[in-house]
Length: 434
Image 1 (cartoon, helix red, strand yellow):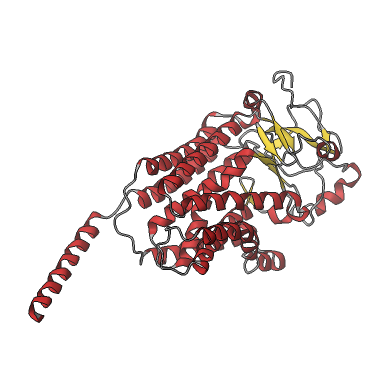
Image 2 (cartoon, helix red, strand yellow; image 1 turned 30 degrees about the horizontal axis):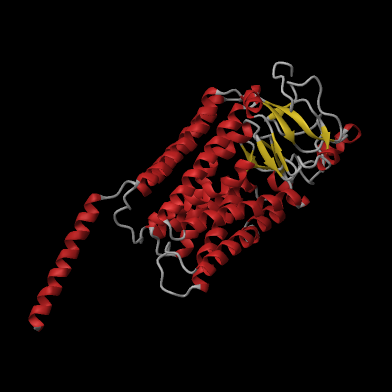
């Protein structure tokens, strides 16, 4: 660890020591230069999200209407989701590595506060261009776009140890590239629920015939923000009941099957109603619209650059992680039961999180450690990650470019011709009547 010479790294703290560390428990600062030397990919990631949040906020106030309320609602929803997941033991299953600014017992990095507004704002901006006739398909589209934006973040960030997952939580046991399949299920259903409440609460309280993104009364808009922020978590969680829990818990259907089923149901429904969309010419992109498109490019390019140029085995990540437990006498039983029950500790000599180890330390963390340092591990096949990122980036390029920029010129020309014919016929009929 001497080659890093960092004040944060190599320190070990128990859970009680972390809780007693006030006021740093509430808000803590760390030299970003130190963190960058040990984990540059994480600083890249945070910078991309903070830039995206700033651009989305400017875009929201430039456009007016409901857009500033969408940004605020997504931010509040994100805080509700994160705080609940940190402090409800049954769903407390991930820990962020150290960031320059974090809050609430080192569990809430600053950039996470703005991650949800970036995901949800970009997704809803794209949905608004589709002009779907079926509102249910609109909510599904929001969930799909959030997953598409989240994909590179989830896949690459966990490999570079931006956070760690709980080793034995059965709800996140089914994974792909160390990402739980339920992470995508979660993003799709929670974004669905947020879209549902955000749009419908305003409609229920302000019964005037308003455009979709035209602002209603302040009371109705603030109510939509509050209800969407508070109820999107239980609303999204309820969507695990009809598909995930019965098939996974009772019939042992893998999480990847239930997640892909949900995503394909959303996708096919969106495709069906997109065929009957009200969409014609896309709205012309203004300066801030182009800025949001540029941010999408930056978002995908940032994670592509990580897998191309950075080495995860050089990552040294300090911060909160799954507490270390004494497993020496329990190893045989633990090995048998680890996929069947959720333990409250990580066994350093028997765990399945192969994206980190302790090779950069002189010894593994001691029993009881809650704050400690971990080390990244090499790519098993870098080319595979590059190919996956190329595929995700290509899909995102085709989807977002088509929505925001491309259109069928012939369709619009023919549509104008038909409209002119209808108008001419109407004028001729009026003349005859006169």
